[in-house]
Image (cartoon, rainbow, N blue to C red; front, side, top):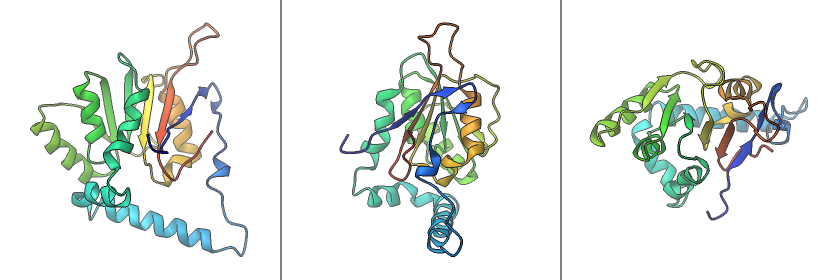
Length: 196
């Protein structure tokens, strides 16, 4: 795994037990540098997901020093057969299609229409037909308790927004009546996010 480990978040009835403030905080008044960093990161993500979607895998490969596929595959170790899976921000669809190839019941959501086009082409070539929906993570178009697992790999800063975390918790199945059942799980694999 080479230092890239997923963060597993267990939802509860009130949302998600997480300390997002540890990794994403608003700057103190007069402290402008985090604002510039956040703005630059948002700008870069927007360009990559829209204007340069065709180069997404190459850019990711270069940034990861050639370990992009290995890092993305970390999530596969935590998804169990028979689970209903939602991949949020599926990008070019590689992990989504790998889950389909494992006969996993999987649905993907991404807000970028350009990523949908790329994923559609890859799915046709590989004779796969994953369910894909164009939506933002803050407004998921699914009923409460639809999924056993939510997978998010290398997310943009949307992942630490309260609305996103509430939505992820909402679409996960609740625990059974027995105390040993924890309910669904959220698997986050990424370099920039650490939520525990």
